[in-house]
Amino acid sequence: MSEELKYTDAFEELQQIVADIEDGEISVDELSIRVKRAAELIKFCKLKLSSTEEDVNEILKELEDPEG
Amino acid sequence: MSEQPQVFTLRQVVSSIRKTIEERYNREYWVKAEMHKLGQTRSGHCYPELVQKEDGKIVAEMRGTIWKHSFDRINAQFIKVVKEPLKEDSTLLMKVKVSFHEIYGISLQISDIDPNYALGELQKERAETLKQLQKENLLDANQKVDFPLLPKRVAIISADSSKGLSDFMKVIEQNDWNYSFFTMLFPATLQGDQAEHTIIAQLNRINRVKDHFDIVVIVRGGGGEVGMSCYNNYNLCKAIASFPLPILTGIGHSTNLTVAEMVSYRNAITPTELGDFLIQAFHNYSVPVKEAAKSIRLFTKSIVELNRSKFLQASLSFKHETRQYISKNHHLLIRHVRNLKTGLIYALQERKERIGRIEQQSSSSCKYLFQQEHRKIQNSLQALPIHGKSVIRNTQNELEKIEHSVRLMNPINVLKRGYSITSFQGKTFSGGTGPGVGDEIITRTEKLVLTSTITQKENNNE
Image 1 (cartoon, rainbow over the protein chains, first blue to last red):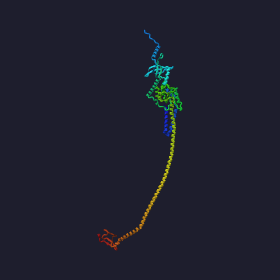
Image 2 (spheres, each protein chain N blue to C red):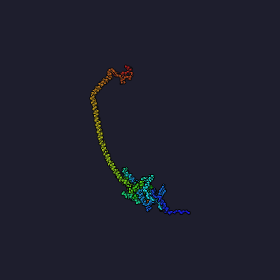
Image 3 (cartoon, chains in turn purple, brown):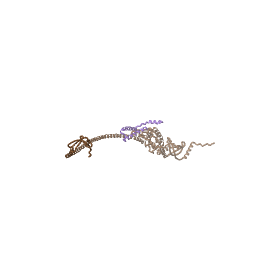
Image 4 (cartoon, each protein chain N blue to C red):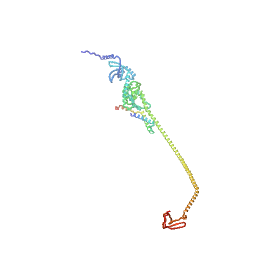
């Protein structure tokens, strides 16, 4: 779930930056900081589309664990 | 001595019973009963357990018999009409004949089962399930679960060998956009009697590791249209509806929508369509990300451009304004200097003129004054001789008068006229003072000076 939150958050933050930039609400001073952040978010989002980190063995272990 | 009782052989008894039953139940009846177990043997004949329940308790029970040829016919009819094979634990309307076999005992020989009744019963079950879920407020419970922005971790409930599963996997694994899903299969039977239990069991397993998954999909395909009534089963539908993750179904059939499909988060007609839906969800995430990158590039550029042109404009207008200001002030200065000059010249001229005027005025008034004075003097000069003569004459007259008076007043003249002057101690006297008796006084006449001593003194009372 924490991972899901991360890519949802990344997506939402990215959308916000785009909206701010489109609305012209970002000053030139902030611009480079926000664009840098947006680039990080885009990279992260794209990575999420093409990679998975879940481990089947881990899930199976949890399934076998009677406590789990 | 008792009579020897009549002894029958077992066969005789059983035969008798059989005869009696066959005579008594000599035709077929329609009987409603629940088929608890089908009890199909390897030979294809079935020996189902038929029961009647009241309040969950079995109140009647009897064995049935379906010969293979009847069973095949009935089953075909069921699959055609009900889209389900004959199913255990369902209430059926059966055409039966009571039969008794010497070895196997009494049973109901089933020659036909009404598929329409069974269909009605299934529809009833479907309606019951819907009603019950509605009562429990579960109909749209799964649809209210938040769908993940990126449904990338997929728990799959399917059969290992299912064509539906391979269709689904093909779509999500061989996509052209390099989208990567994490999938894990939770094998289950997807149709028929076993479906309910195996699917529920797998849902329970997934629930234990639900944090590793975004969604659950139930895919089935290639199994034809039969055995779908499990998806109207209350327990299964409830398990789906109340599951904490979104459940998506793609169980591929063309009959009426099952309750399970109705209560799931989303139903796709086929596993392929379900796969496409997930790919679309990735697109929905990916496209805005790409758009965002594009937008940011575009807008950043335009913001920089805008600011650059603003700056340029500002510096240009600064230059222009400065120049204009300087030139304006330069002109102003020149004008001031000019004004000052003309003002000074004018003022000087004015002063000069004024002085000239004053000069003129003063010279003319001086002249006038001079003239006036001159005239006065002239007048005076003219008047002077006339005056002088008259003054002299007057003066002469005066003088003559005075001379006459003086002549008249001369004591000599007085003396000549007989008067005398008496003096005492060198001075004339009058009034009360003067010399007393015995004093010597001198009296002057015209020709004589007489000295006298006073003998008498009296007051003149004239």
